[in-house]
Amino acid sequence: MRAVIQRVSQASVAIDEQIIGKIDKGFMILLGIHEEDTQEDADYLIRKIPLLRVFEDAEGKMNQNIQDVAGSILSVSQFTLYADTKKGNRPSFIKAARPETAIPLYEYFNEGLRQQGLIVETGEFGGDMDVALVNDGPVTIIFDTRDK
Image 1 (cartoon, rainbow, N blue to C red):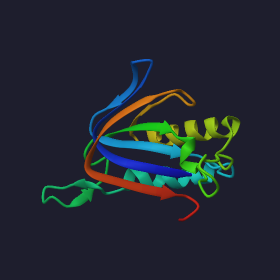
Image 2 (cartoon, helix red, strand yellow; image 1 turned 30 degrees about the vertical axis):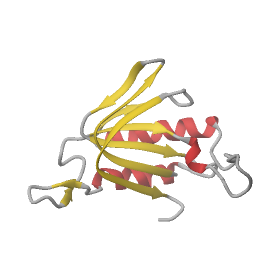
Image 3 (cartoon, one colour; image 1 turned 60 degrees about the vertical axis):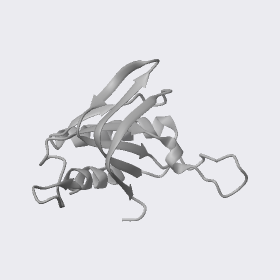
Image 4 (cartoon, rainbow, N blue to C red; image 1 turned 180 degrees about the vertical axis):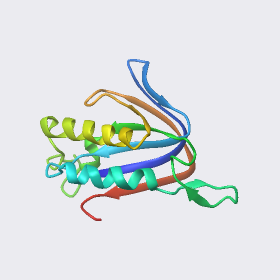
C-alpha cells in the first residue's frame, strides 16, 4: 500500500458538487492499494499513522500526533498511486488492485483507523471526486508498505 499523507488545516471531497466528506485539522490520506496487498499491509499503516508526529507542540517542533491535536482524517482511495510510467506517455495501472480486492482493504484500513479512536471521513471508491485541501506547512509524508 502507498499512503500519501498531507497535514491539512482543512480538506473535503465532493461528488457532483455535493460534499461527501469534510474535515478540519488533520490528515488528508490518498491510499493506493497494490494487487498483492493484504490486511497485514493495512495493519502496518493503521499502527503507524496515528503515531506519526508531524503536528507542532508549544515550542513549534513537530512533536505531536493526530490524536494529541484532536485531528481527523479524510481518506480517499487513489489507484493512480500505482501508475507505471516507464514506457510511453500513457500510464499503466496494472499493479493497482482490482476493486474486488481493493474495496475490502480500503474499508478495513478506514475501520482500523476508527478503532484507534480517530474520526475518519471518506471519499467514494471509484467515484469521480473533487478533492480540496489546504496543506498545512506544507507537510507531506509517504508510506509504502513494500519499503518498510
